[in-house]
Amino acid sequence: MVYNEHGVNRMPPLPLWAVLIGVTLYASSCGGLSGGLPAPGAANPQTGSSIRPEQPIVIVFLNALDAATIPSNLSVTATGSPVAHNWELMEEGYRLVVRPLPRWPAGAALQVVLHGGQGRAAFADGRELRTITLRFWVEVL
Image (cartoon, rainbow, N blue to C red; front, side, top):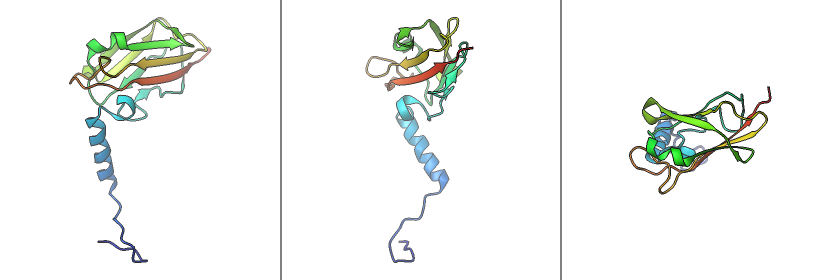
């Protein structure tokens, strides 16, 4: 037991490496934090930021995605209307790249949603992915 100067029992602080290992194990066991993403900064650009009309959106996962589950579960809208886009899984399914065809509408509020849950987008190992929603503001050039 460890006591402070007031005689109160307290646990010594965990070293940073122990905390990081714990978070990593948790993230890999559930497919990632926050809807399947490995960390809040796993989208490039980060959700909520402004993007150029020709800029692709890259989402990085801790676990590989099942490519067959992506087409019917990926939606991109600009101010509520569907937007033409294509997508590609890279790095053996760990990186999803969403590209505009040919550009995102200037000045629009862009929303990218990968719908997860039962019968929706999933990881390659069969585990369900939670829905991921990313929002961006398209710059006016």
